[in-house]
Image 1 (cartoon, rainbow, N blue to C red):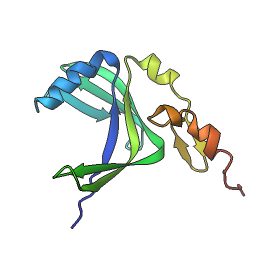
Image 2 (cartoon, helix red, strand yellow):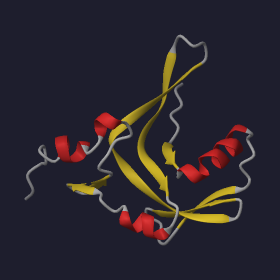
Image 3 (cartoon, helix red, strand yellow):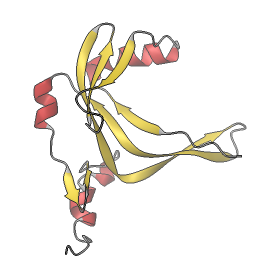
Image 4 (tube, helix red, strand yellow):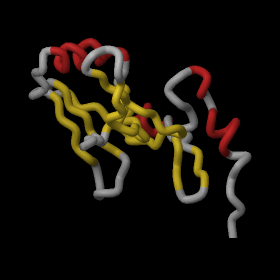
Length: 134
């Protein structure tokens, strides 16, 4: 039986990276929480760490990533497809300024992938292959 877990990438600002990494590695994540803002289909969140609240946004990635795991360092098993990323911002203005999602059909996508070669991949590759509307 194969287990597939729902997973998202979690991108935090450089100022929070050390704190989040320390809490995750020590398995003491009681000081972190994530709550949705607004209605249930909203992509806006509030990330809280040690009582400090930061705005966050859930975006669709332009390419699906496969997450693999291993038990013996030689055989790898796929355990999830990752298609979304949660981006945490320093303040509300930064979140509102980063609203350059690209719309293709009924879906909105983040314009960049997670590696340098996928910078502006939606504009370079997928917009040309837009299906005819109508």
